[in-house]
Image (cartoon, rainbow, N blue to C red; front, side, top):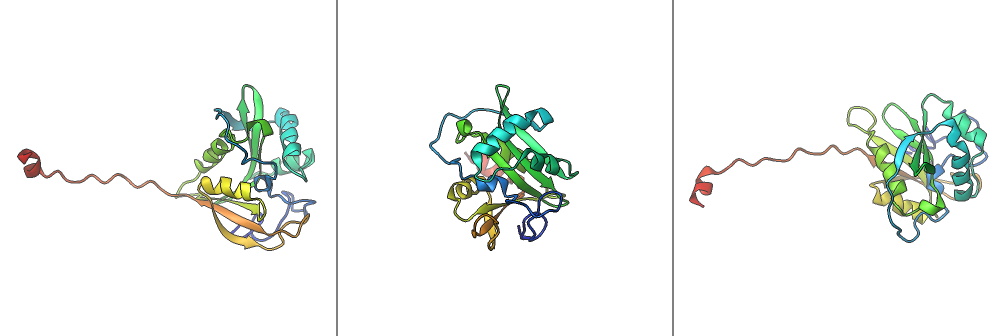
Length: 206
């Protein structure tokens, strides 16, 4: 992502530096209909991913992607010091997950999916909001990810979440000749409210 790239520039590698069988494009490969009809929203508890979450995470991964990550892919990524996993939990059930990398001045999303039963119920939006809340003007000031050019659902989802397409990676994916859009969310500090001086004469005059 611009710094245009897969993870840290233009290369496309798994977390251990190997060329992937499929891309580390994660959430941006939501070909599973995350933009279907709106349903009743649910509130989720978002926490760090732990090892016992893996069966539910793998179920969501398998139903979401044509070329899903294997368990060893998740484990390999999460063993890296800068790689973080988080899950969204509803009624003691994992209903979504996200894998991302931390760099000095940015966050790079690698994988992100929501259970088919919970799509369009605010789960993905709550997870994205949690990630965006980690940004600041002093340190990490943007979130980056790649999305397939044909995946309009994901493009719309991220655009509504405040992301913008900033560049194109040509023939980015190994399983298809598709290009990828690099999408970015940049931190915007809230401006303090402007307090206007009180015109005492006008106020007293009514």
